[in-house]
Image (cartoon, rainbow, N blue to C red; front, side, top):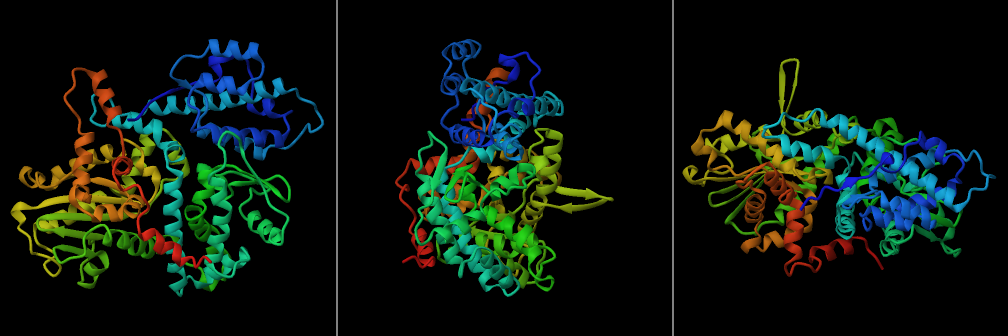
Length: 566
């Protein structure tokens, strides 16, 4: 169930004219870095405002006064303000390093600065709420929730162990992919040189040696660690320096620099982990940004790819990750027809499905979209901006009277083609009078697991269905399911076991769970939306967590062997 908790701001407690810059100016930078690292680690475990105040202050009188102004079901800490505060601190110059600040003064100044960042968020949200769909619109409830959650959903909702596992799997697949790709061998060579590694296996192993101990670090404190001054000290220091926030620091939207450099260097042997999630995602997610935005520009011009991202999406995201995962999600027998997008192309078809699976008259049509929203779009909290960006990624782009169809319209066109048996060179062994279509959009970023996104995109999907199909045909088409590639990778063996856990069966259960029910009034309707506001990926994770599927899948051992660990 999605919960909405009121975030408290500066005006809740104070009516002065403080600024963040003035409040932080006399505070020592290193003390601030340790404090904000602690706050970042507390975000998940501490949602209650009263608890935050109790832990924040030593001054009992001040603590009591603030708690008296605090209402129930409210919070102060949130990852977005914590990361913004960290950005302020990293960019801050120590202007008064000699000035002595009392612990009580430090605490109240930091507290006020944090609340001002919460106030900034409130202003953004208030402005964005003015651009919601009109009352009574089919999109209104989904739009309202989406604008409040989309900007930081990936930062607050995750299982670190699951992300660690899937990041490791995808990084191994990626390195094997570029190792075999003649156009990217020079990229790999430069990357390894930068990290002073001989092989990609060594790079991953070095990173795992850093990450694994940190995953079990006590979250009650900031994650500070020290290197042993042994024979590996110089190598480890050099390696860590490439993950360390640079001295000359300017942040980009969506905390791109923090994601790529999640470590703060205190001295040659002491480091602070800014965010465990960012460090774990450095295994793969930030690795791809590094190849795309840095390595591709540093290799000799003759080896540079004009569109690294496009090459990566076509040949790795789709033809490696998607093909491998879906091949393993279904039984390997002739009752299950599995056809890759490349197989359609070999038969001279264009605008083909990215992947197609059929069992008798069940047709699963997959469209793969490895896309992301720009940081300023993601953080806008304005539905007019969000919906425009999402439609351009997943519905269509209209420019100069030219329409470029995206995932939703591409899926609809292919459903029509299967009705018409257009792909007669590929598969026609089905009865079109009894077809049961499962349209599936595969995404590659956890941001698209934000609750209500699937419900909203289905509104657009159904509107487009009305333009193409009659009622009888529409009765054969299920709702459009948005599925994260991580879900397909993590649970491939579970889906393959079939029974009640087959992929399309779980899709049916998901849409039954989120289906709107008749409600007495608007309040009951909104409560029902919150109760059923969940992505398919989270729905699946919860379902399998209640079964005997908790132990690691056997395919994980195959990946570990690829590292050649001794």
